[in-house]
Image 1 (cartoon, protein in one colour):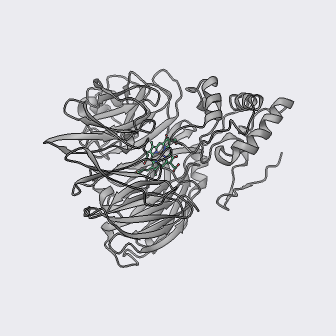
Image 2 (tube, rainbow, N blue to C red):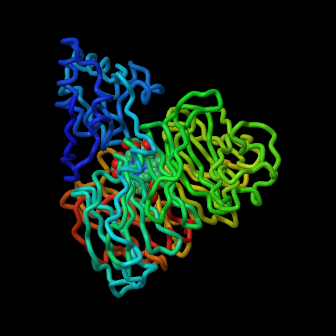
Image 3 (cartoon, rainbow, N blue to C red):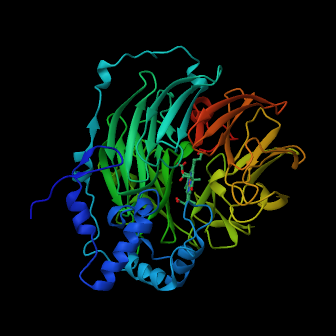
Amino acid sequence: MKIKPLICKITGLTLALASLFVSATPDTSSKDNKAAEKLYVEHCQSCHGVGRLGAMGPALFPENLSRLRKNKAVKVIKNGRPATQMPAFDKILNQTEIASLIDYIYTPAKELPKWTLADIRATNIQHFEQSKLPNKPQFDADLMNLFIVVELGDHSATLLNGDTFEPITRFKTRFALHGGPKYSPDGRFVYFASRDGWISKYDIYNMKIVSEVRAGINTRNLAVSSDGKYAIVGNYLPHNVVILDTKDLSPIEMIETKSSEGVSSRVSAVYNAPPRHSFIVALKDVKEVWEIPYSDKGGVDVYKGWAHDYRKDGGEGKVENWKSEDRFPVRRIQTQDYLDDFFFDPEYINLIGTARNSHNGQVINFDTKKKVATIELTGMPHLGSGITWDYQGKEVFASPNIKEGKITVIEMENWQVIKEIKTDGPGFFMRSHSKSPYAWADVFFGPNKEKVHIIKKDTLEIVKTIAPAPGKTAAHVEFTKDGKYVLLSIWDNDGAVIVYDANTLEEVKRLPMKKPSGKYNVYNKINYERGTSH
Ligand code: DHE
């Protein structure tokens, strides 16, 4: 059969993905299945993608739903899912329709879609030859005080001057970016990941997307190594991580994410751990966390004592046995529970993890691989958005909660919860700056989604609550380099980024934007400022 290349409506680009979709198509021979497929196309496809491959929402195959029992899946379709874009369908679909959709998404594809290293390589685009582009910024601004603002409304991003709060340029991104874009260590380049697997490298100096590659079919996020040489991409589909050369985004290695027992797992997220010169990989479906050193020294100098941990065959190898091809060896850390959401202490000695459906947080020491504490964390803490600061001479960690209206404050020395700050509803993001006396926390969900709380860091009390755009979600703040101003998003197509004086808490400026989500300050990001996400 001759397969025509598929024209991707979203990006307008011709993608040679036809074989992928063909192999992902479920058996549609039965009448019931045809009816279910029709329902899927009508109600689910716009978010979950053609052929169930994932887009804004995750891919829907049994292999990706292994942790979701069918009766729970029914509830998700009926009631929606908190902290996601998944709406409730109980008023749109009847019970029989929901049941047939459940059967449909739990029916294996004839063959799971493949996306090999060769497929990835074939998508690698060089829009510009880097060596032919000027090595100087083509605009005048403090390069450390720039912001990238992601605008989900029309899949764009704005490069913003953090001194004048004037946009420098605005450009199209791939469809449905997710997670924070990541900067190169010098702040010149920024890397974006879209939910459908596209990784784009943007040259800030020249205001151009220079390289792109499709590293996965359904992607979570990316991280960039501290030496700036590698990017790692974590995927839901296929189950793997892909390591890219940041020079041109060409793929270097693909590592299938299988537990030591051979069980395949989606990747929840990938992170960079600067002091460890390694990437951390959170696995969703197995009780393991991975550490992958990327240092050019092959980890040998840094991790001498752990050489055997990194051996792919698990044997007690000696350091001398290291081969250059073991560039990205995997060190496995077994956990007692499935861990979805992570936070790291600033030294990257411990990781704090929670499973979305469990009631405790676990603190795991990276070096000993042992659990060192259990934290009382109820609801659904969003650890990834947590921040740290000094409180009464001790370091505390504060996390919003996406199910309950509270911020949990934990003393990091003994991992005790010292306060639960009551909020006007569940929140998503939290931010501060080492030079600011305040931490900002949004109320992302429920009737108070328009509100943002401002917490005094030395009293742990809410001192002000703002609602700058009545009826519209206000969420996600980021500080300027010096901590003097705060930028807040109004998540609406007719939205804005609002600039506040970080000390007087008064509004300074309102910039119209199309559903701005995250914004990312170059200095704060490349310096791993404590008050921001990493
Ligand atoms: Fe996110 C970051 C996971 C839904 C907007 N989100 C992250 C990160 C993870 C994560 C692991 C950190 C990765 C990074 O920055 O490199 N997000 C999840 C989920 O599991 C969840 C709940 C379900 C899902 O669909 O994936 C989820 N996230 C959402 C949304 O619905 C949001 C609000 C809108 C959107 O863009 O899809 C959303 N997530 C964000 C943003 C960040 C993020 C803006 C970066 C925050 C930052 O400041 O760094």
